[in-house]
Image (cartoon, rainbow, N blue to C red):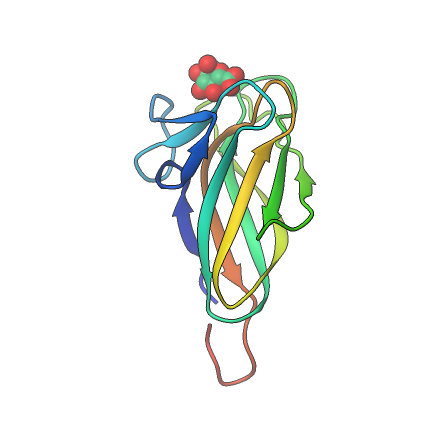
Length: 137
Ligand code: GCU
């Protein structure tokens, strides 16, 4: 299946701000997490069918330390992911993981777990696993 991109600046944000002052981002900006634990960006993700999907999170981290996020789908137990330094706030990278989606509307929340807050989050790309032969999700 083809990836579907969801821009962070269009998502629901708690303890963060949509900004655009660091070049190279996708869309019209990114989310700057407030420098506290607990801020989140929440995306509404549509899946064509239940199953696994590849999740790529586009980000920048211009500091010298990890900016970890917990990723939770539909309120389930989160997966902790590291977002290591990218060298500059204008240098963007992506972290990839696998999530399990249900058919239809899913809520995907990326929550900062360190007191420094999260990285600057640009987007998520969701790529559902291929369906049975003959289908194209
Ligand atoms: C800088 C940078 C922000 C970033 C922040 C941080 O202020 O300009 O884009 O979010 O550092 O440390 O989180």
